[in-house]
Image (tube, rainbow, N blue to C red; front, side, top):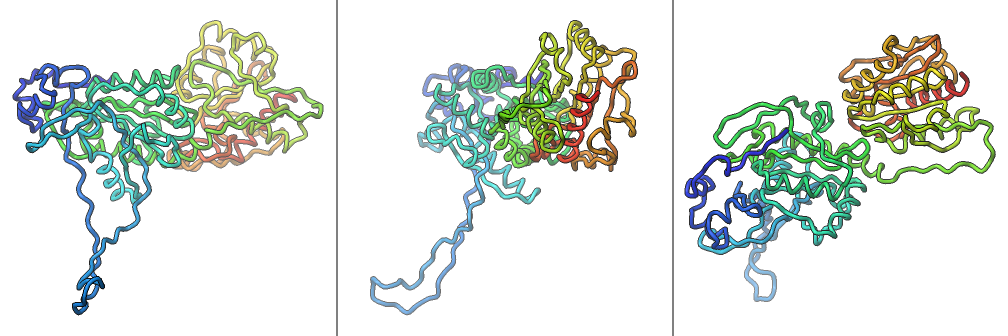
Length: 524
């Protein structure tokens, strides 16, 4: 778990705390609205500092002077005329959202308005400047607020919520955020200085915005950890200057094959801005910027996928009677069991259009405990995360398979957690029959399409070399095929839409494998 540290745990005196913040004690009192140290520094609503980093640098002026002319009577053109020439602004990628109640502080003898999100005003702009130099991609950040935001990801693909203090989203904003994410938008969040008040508030708000979709720790093979830089453990720095190394503390909420919410309960934004201060817990500067580069790359790589997933395809059954009554049942399990909502429909359509089968366009979602599950000749299951079957589920699946059923499974996006879970659970179902490579001459590989060579996604080639043949595994019981498994993704290929970070089989070959499995299930 990630535990953020705050000054309340460091035992700083009132004077020492404000001196380390670069403020006088009097300014701290002013920041409290005249209510004094306990209310300003430790109260749940206003416990955070008012300054983390400097404001953004002023934009350079681009001027082009005209030639000089002899003096002429006004109102004709003056002696010299200079006008600004601004280059086109890069596209807006991330909007930093205004959060926190309005407070007032005294700065340089002037009373100025302050809100919590303004403590590190240059963070995301500095990150995008850094990624522009390192990655060669040019985008900008903008300031935004919920009152004037369109909630259209085509206008602004990502929003950033950052701060120290507790906050509450307006009731009318929550459903709009749901629509924004479902339409392909990304919510980024960072607890500045690792402040727990903000972290607790953000988790509470996400529970209300997305009930039933909890924030979960990022998996080691999550693409956000390898979208540009391949990252292992992170190095964190505490307020006393000491460092320690732990697993990445990112938390995500996933929607299909993409994360729609990415949250860091330990500080990243101070690292993006490149400054140090003696408080909190934060990712060290170099790694924070690498994480930021991964976030930017991930956002760009999954934006179109998010737009695609926002429109789930629904295929309606043809009115003509079917010769074959075949329904593909997808297995519900405790993991993320349906990351590719259009995959099965696309596969069934392909099988109908490219074979003599008249396949019904209907997918049934079933659980192992459902009585109707035993009536379907083919079960399909997939997912990213770990899952486990109960002893009853194990027994039910064993009965189904030994009675004539067939199970097709794949690790969505080639994720390790699902792969490990599937192998473990199948060992419980058939302790004496292990998953083994499907023989190259097996009838399944030639019952419709002749499958000799397979094209894999670039990530597979990068990490596993130039695989050529089908990497399918199987379990055979009493001479009959009962399980077909692919550790490389098939469902992404069935969807026929690019998944930038998938370890999988390319579209055409994924559809061929799926069609052959359907034909095999119906004819054996």
